[in-house]
Image (cartoon, rainbow, N blue to C red; front, top):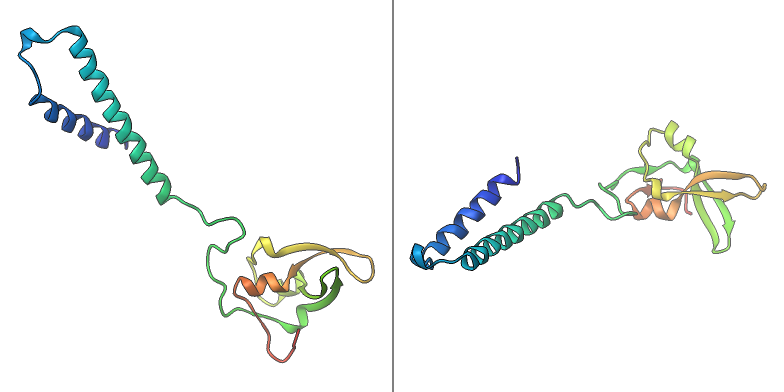
Length: 144
């Protein structure tokens, strides 16, 4: 059990620390014993909470929308690019099927968007600016 090892050590340390403060056996009352047990339980609970906090920090995941790994150096083929007029001006989008046929797989899902193109057709594409922020580079020779 993962919790027993640190918990046992913590309780043992607390017991050793408190032995120097112990009064003679005949002078201890039930109230003193309750205080001692409550103090030991508090120290154990605090140790458990701190242990859980460190374990959770070690298992932290990347923030949503951020790459878990770098895509640096992967080239986006020019033949997969298309420019569409949006509310924000002209933007470059990449066809997912073309990218897959070109060997690019496991593209960042947060870069996939649904657009209505110039023919009023709805389709899923990858946002070129988002892919560039993720580390992909557009193929040279085609300026977009």
